[in-house]
Length: 328
Image 1: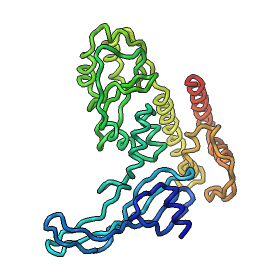
Image 2 (image 1 turned 180 degrees about the horizontal axis):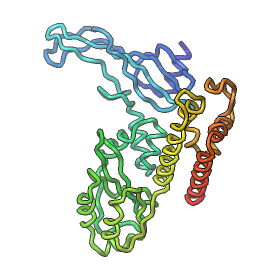
Image 3 (image 1 turned 30 degrees about the vertical axis):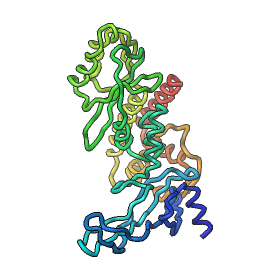
């Protein structure tokens, strides 16, 4: 019991109606088993007395990391039924909004990081939420557009949102201040937005950092004639990684599907994509090779299957290293 109380305190769960039942360690993340229960209140419709009915199927609520581990709260909420009208109500808590699966404190943390101008992709990775979740929080902000000023260095990017819907985001590259969030990335949408600025203001922009979406280039040159177009490091590395993966698949398909080489290239493809300096040197038993190997040793075996694969891998590593040096 003392341990469960300690978990409640360390997680910062203030709702006294939430009772911690168990605590599981899965190795990669922590899971807290809990229930939400309190006395039945009156019905909002008929003011009749409600009675406890049953428990709702447990909600899987994403929470803040605890001691470096991802944390998931499996919360069972008590349901109530009105004796007069038969209406069903579910118990509510400040821990998470009704019908939501992300804890309120996580959303508050997203807002805090947005205010601190942390990149959206970094926020989604650090808090184990989707970019769409971050964007939904971002949409709650109201931006004041200063039509008399644009930064000398802008960055353009887009994010997927609500099932293939894409939004365009313009930022001050140096301060990470958000300048605009536009629905869609069509040339007309972006052009109409920036044409609100005078030519003099647009001429003050010196650099625009963007991804490899080609329609941006010509439009940016026309809108900002004095700006140099710079490709974003992240998207360059992403493009190189995709090219490396296509080479791997081509070489893999040269082997018989039942062969050891085919299975190894298919199973351990991520090792070829990773930065070689970040590969783990911990030794584990690998069923594919029937021996204990480190990731570095597995990578060497994969590259030994094809000189062409090794050549492209070395090229990817060299490009990744150069991009990292330039970025620093």
